[in-house]
Image (cartoon, rainbow, N blue to C red):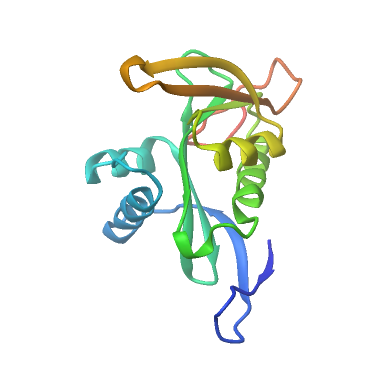
Length: 179
């Protein structure tokens, strides 16, 4: 993506890039779980579900040189076969607030688009204003509000972005080849 210097660090410039996760390893599963716990109040994954997403979904890594600083887990939408769903996205705390989230989302969207997907959706807490703004700045629009815990006034926003106009485009998210 580009070179990046983190405030307070040595004179080291980091090369930032987005790559697809490769083979499932205990270290990669642990990284997914760590970043998830640093991002959300409650854990999204167990080691088993993290490994399942690595095998059956698509996991993108935000890397600063050899350090994984962010993860994005995607899967095919169950009710829209030409749509990816971002299940989780997170960046390690020391790297937040530097515009990397928006660039990470843009890079993931580009990779999903290149696979032939027509749209991408996600759910985000209405009260997570920073994340909502990042997604809106990239082009996601709120298409639905879902009240998930009325007693706590918890509302999730379903957000969606169009990736392509080609209705004939069908892909295999795990194999990455148009059919």
